[in-house]
Length: 249
Ligand SMILES: CC(C)(COP(=O)(O)OP(=O)(O)OC[C@H]1O[C@@H](n2cnc3c(N)ncnc32)[C@H](O)[C@@H]1OP(=O)(O)O)[C@@H](O)C(=O)NCCC(=O)NCCS
Image (cartoon, rainbow, N blue to C red; front, side, top):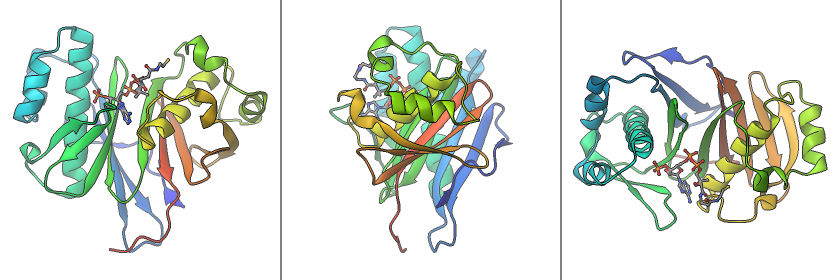
């Protein structure tokens, strides 16, 4: 089993508001599985926006320049900044301009650059997060505020079994259970690169286990994936990941 969230709360980096979590595999010849970067972007100053922009590559700057809405501009910039920090930390490289985070036809982020590394991105109004991981794994990241009111089309698909699993889990309560289920399902939808363009019910959860720290969920229809979640500050962080066979260097 990989060690997720073992070092939470994460240590503070030299850049204010940036947290880094290194995700490792126990007993492995391939220890550095992924790097999660979490950024608190509340009250960013113009200087901080400019600092983040210096991490973007020319195609990313062009995309940013064409964005009309401040909310989207903020989410794109903070998400790409988190992505660059995660890519640098995961690969050990130093120049963020070596990487360009492009997008697929389904809007999934695609890393162009010198390393065989993939990325998953998520944002809320106040947090941005990115997970950089070895391209031999399949992973998806989602964050959400714990008290977010989740839309009806999603909540209608929550099964009786899932409600029962949440009620029996001491780490989840009525006020944050929908938001927890949402992050678990969004994270697997990103791991398989469809996003929520498929019926929600296919992501039904079959098992929830309490880990220390965090929660681990398994899926009814995707036995090849599991989802690690933890509550941090005001958000849930969920990472769905392929269940690893032996990977050697
Ligand atoms: C992909 C999706 C699940 C993201 O959820 P979200 O709540 O909008 O936003 P998040 O901040 O958590 O994630 C956004 C990031 O997901 C990533 N993403 C988008 N599509 C993706 C896909 N198909 N696979 C993997 N990652 C994807 C992107 O990196 C995006 O950030 P960026 O645009 O800045 O690069 C969702 O937007 C989606 O599937 N939309 C299409 C279908 C839809 O609108 N359904 C209605 C839902 S009620």
